[in-house]
Image 1 (cartoon, rainbow, N blue to C red):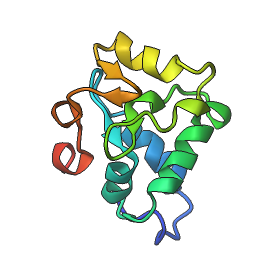
Image 2: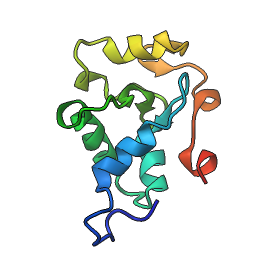
Image 3: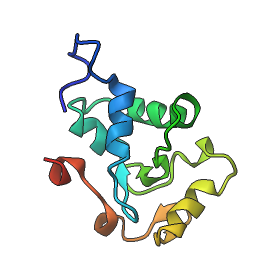
Length: 120
């Protein structure tokens, strides 16, 4: 994907839409980080903006975005408070076979999906 911040073509997706496109590619039972998505999109310093995009994903589009599969760089469920109910993010991940203890993904390195490696 091209750098979303340098695009002047209005037909290209904006940064939030690009975040959604990448997030939809995360395989079932795998997770990635805000920073990994930002790096893939060519904007490594924008991990917080990735979080903002995912926080608004359920409000602004008609398509389901698996935002529960995006966690912080050490595998913590740092975005869980943006889901309805305090355990929704955890429950969604556990339904995919991911083990979580104290809001931390067990075997995070093994489950980590890096879009830079997987999507090239």
